Image (spheres, rainbow, N blue to C red):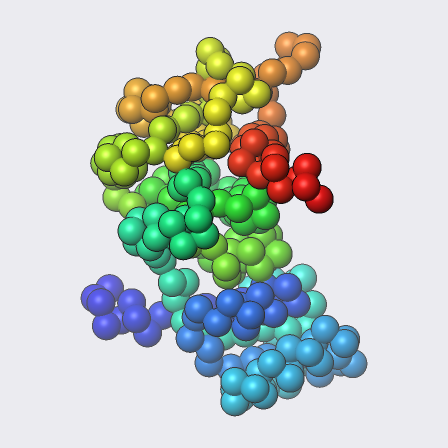
Length: 259
């Protein structure tokens, strides 16, 4: 596929939250909206109003046809044809942290291949105030409509990049003054003893193998979640939720206390 063909690629977002959040974020190119012909919900009518404000074609289709268009049964009666997901360069993520008056907080997902887990991690990361999410170009789920649905539309707001070399990206982040902490069940430091208040890049690996050995070797620290019992470990999305909110607590403890 050449560059011109890539620019013409489209996909269909589905579900009330992904479609509404895509409109709110307004980062994609919008083409047309599909509405199931059965009685629309209030949320779908709200989407229709949004579509009209963008002067988009609104096509009423039978529910089974909408299932075929979206490729999903759980479409909630709505689909939105959009342009490609807008990937962000690393510099834009770092600028976002500066604009917010924060130290950079990045999430690197090394080998998360399940779109459901990727969507769950993106949703949590967005809520925890992440400035950017970085995925490898291969051996990773892509930011598709399935991921947008699983993230409840959070994907439409986050800054996300796909890189060909995670090690080179880690080196670039270190050059910008960030500490790189990899999640590893055998890590010698608890997440509760790690300082997340500075510039930090958090690395989480995939379900089966965790962080790849070469990537792990370039982490400054390996951190773990304390557990009782002898069970193997938390899955990637659950572990991510725990560590991301420990980071959020540390980085925003004053704000939390003031509230």
